[in-house]
Image (cartoon, rainbow, N blue to C red):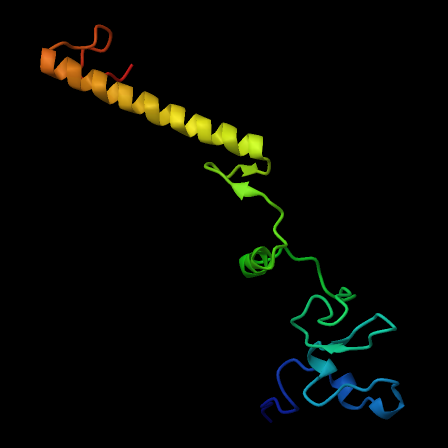
Length: 145
C-alpha cells in the first residue's frame, strides 16, 4: 500500500477544516484560510482578517500576535523612506551609520582631505619622475613609505 498524500493541500492545519465558523462572531471572509496562517486582528475594535504574510493588521496596524520578530527587509525600509518615515540614518563609507548633519559634514571633510592628499602625492610623484629624483627612503619614484 503506497501513500500518495491526499487531503486538501500544502501544510494546511486540518483542525481548521472541521471548525464551525458559524458560531464565531467574525467568521473569515471568502479567500481567507486560517489553516495556512491567515489571522484575525487581535484588536477588539478592528476584527479585520489578514493574510499570513502580514506582520501587522492592514487597517489598525496592530501586531500579529503569532508573528516572529524579523529584521525589516530592504523593500520595507525603502517603502518607509518613500513614505517619509525614514530614520534619517545614512550609510557612509565603511558601513558606518551617520545620523546627524555634523557627522555627515565630518565624513565629507575627511573624504575631501583624502582626495587632496592623494592629488598632492600624485603631483610629487610626477615631479620626482620629471626631475629624475627618487625617494631618499624607499629609493623609488613612486614613494611607498
